[in-house]
Length: 292
Image (cartoon, rainbow, N blue to C red):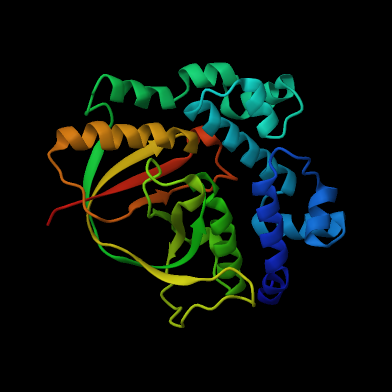
């Protein structure tokens, strides 16, 4: 897609992404999403798939199942309620879809999914259950899009960042991606959580970043702080992350002798979620420490 095309469609991408995130429990077929975009279904399908390398149907399914996995791992909601919340008409259809992607049926995932290993390690206070690397990190100057709301929905900000970087003729697939999380989700309401979708500033981009159009996503400069980080490499679904953070903060930090620094938590994403299945996603969790 040419740079001008990205700019022409940016607001449509924003509108559709926001609609999907806010209406996962409702019908989200191609016709409805084309209406939101203000285009014909055939035209919109080709534009979106060309832009993001993922069809609208695949995006909707991925986000619904991602939300379902998160609810299974972090709440006691009945499976039927989760199925309805995530847009499935009944438990049977939800179970088929979830099992095909997560390789376990919902009930088994809740009881024995990978998140449970982290919960057990915290409950038994096993600070060496997982390998934590102490790493010195240089500051990373980034371009970023701010996100406010549930951390699980930061993908909306990454799609805005993708539109901007591609419109400026940079190769999106060549970029490193980072999430910066500014608030403690155990202390702040979900709707008020602040985070940023970031990528290192391309070396040949020296201008001040500007939005593509009036009302489009704002692109800001952001620097990931250099310093000492505890780095935990995670392979698995994003729904595992709350349990793993609880182990990291509540077990590893307590036993390690390290002191936390007053800096944001950072995540580095090592594989695109629309290409990599959820059980094989690779994420580095960077916990800032006081240190030389």
